[in-house]
Length: 111
Length: 112
Image 1 (cartoon, rainbow over the protein chains, first blue to last red):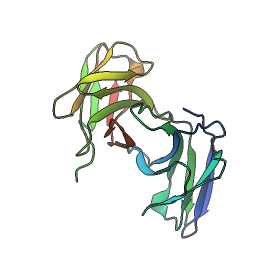
Image 2: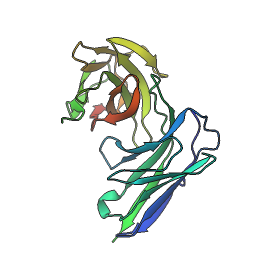
Image 3: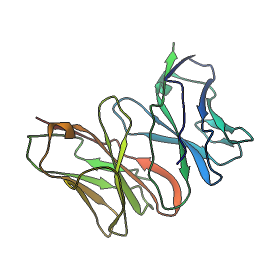
């Protein structure tokens, strides 16, 4: 699976949009971009995934560049409960379901 | 719709002992994976079970073994515990053909 690169930390004001970038310049055509987050002492929580089209669900939006070399996770109205480590992971479809977690981005939402 | 459940939530063992951790997958899922997360690090893949067989394995010694039952639930066994086995053990379930993995909240194992 392709390596991903994320900034180690980011701050965001409560109520504002949080935009978390991820670089995956070596991603292959059959690899999806997955986002998870982990709040302290809990298991990772699935947020969203996409292949090449932008995706939106009740938690977030995922914007993938046309060349698929980078993506941005958008939390439209961040709350204090969104403070967590966010992981961007490239993962192929099919039976090989081994997630490789990098260091992630520590997002701190400030009051 | 029940998510992934793990038991126990916390466990304290002594070096050299053996431990069994349990996981019930999310309803509808047929594949279970186990991860180890040391303090301050990201989760590391241990192994994956599907159709009661180990399908993939990460870089973990044979002291780590598992089992999957016909109802898709799974166990992680660790023998001859070391201090370095202290970690949060996470179970994730998914469909074998693809789709997102969903995690439980883990079992915190402390080895003294």
